[in-house]
Length: 149
Image 1: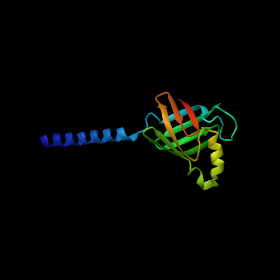
Image 2: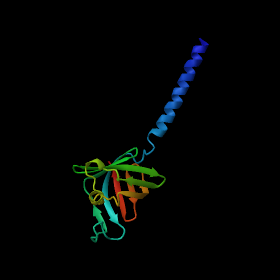
Image 3: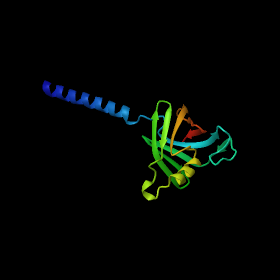
Image 4: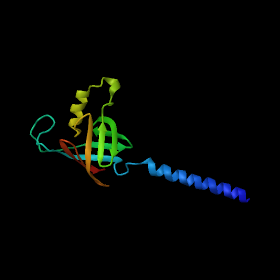
């Protein structure tokens, strides 16, 4: 009887340890994961991506969805899927693999994601603020302001 109790105790303790380790590393981007509404884009040099004079552009109906290392940018009925990697206070987007199997045109994709606030196919942003309700990202040319949905 004592041997059975010890075996059950060891198995239970092992299971609890495995469960703890699995849960703590399963969602490393808890602050980032979920849906974020892009509210506005500020251009630090006063010009948008097309060269038009523009300090700030209010954005409507653009959503950034994060899950693990994937970012999906959604506007109306169009989605752009890329990789998102967070490291310290930096967030890196990589859309170089987006839709490569169906006539991938990097210039076209760049024009389209520029309108959604992304500076380049591969872009690094500094995370100025990231909490449960707001996120502010700063790139070389832009400041992106988000509200958590």
